[in-house]
Each structure stands twice: as structure tokens, then as C-alpha cells.
Length: 191
Image (tube, rainbow, N blue to C red; front, side, top):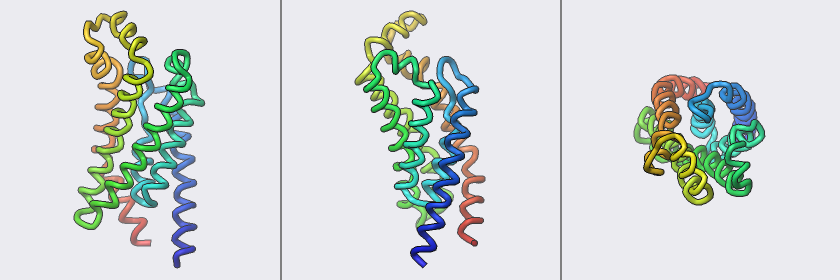
């Protein structure tokens, strides 16, 4: 029984890995300002809930790797390659891992709440780690970018100009798709 369950989780993990790569590459064509919208957070949450937090972390790592390889992080790579790689990979891996942990902690109480909270935590962690990485590795450059765009306050630029719209889109999409994620989970659990 455990072997069958492991094979099922690995197979689902492989399918979600392919979805993450495809959606991130397609998502790179949808821009919000200078950055693409991360459409991959929904399958990351779904994979984390259906499999476990380790698979969620793996899917987030694949997401981060795809961001780096697709050129979506090129503006940051030009400034600080090591800081970019650390930020992008850590934010991806932790958003998927955190979604899985939150789901597993809450699913016994209320499955809808578990999915909703996992869907909220994923973009919060993704954006939060991005902003921390910006602060640690790119503050001077971000200050210059903000001033060039007319922002007098770097914090305002980071939250409104750099990450705000993207975050709101990701959060809204995840919350809106929560019932669909729950339906898929229920179908998989019946089989």
C-alpha cells in the first residue's frame, strides 16, 4: 500500500512539474510592468496539497529554476547573480513548502479552509521572500529604479511599483480558484 501511494505521489509530482514549467513559460508572456505574473502558484498549491510539503517545495524549486532559465530575472541577474539565484530559488521552494505545511496542518479541521489558507500562504511567502531578497541584495539598484520612475520612497516603490500588482493578481487568482482546487482534491481522494 505504501509503495503504491509513493508511486502515485511521484507520478503526480512529475505531472505537476511539467505543468509548472509550461505555465511559467507561458506566463512569461503576460507582463505586469517589468515582471511576468506567476501563474504557476495554483499547481504548486495543488501539488503540495495532493502530495505533501516536500513535493510542494520541489514544485516551487522548479518554478524558481524556470524563472531563472526563462530570463524573467535578467534585470536582477545583471546586478547581483548570486543574490538573484538565492532569492529566486528560496522564494519558490519556500512558497510551495509552506503551502503544503499549512494544508496538512488544517485539512483535518476543515478542508476548504486548508486549501484557502494554502492558496493564500503561497503568494504571501513568494512575494515576502522576494521583497526580503530585494532588501538584502538589490537595495541600491531598487532605490535608483524607484527614483527613475518618480517614487520618492523606496518602500513605496517596492510594495506598489515592484511587487504589489503582481502579488494582488497571484493572491486573487489563488483565492478565486480555491473551490476548483478543492474539487480536484476531492476527485483524487475518491479514487
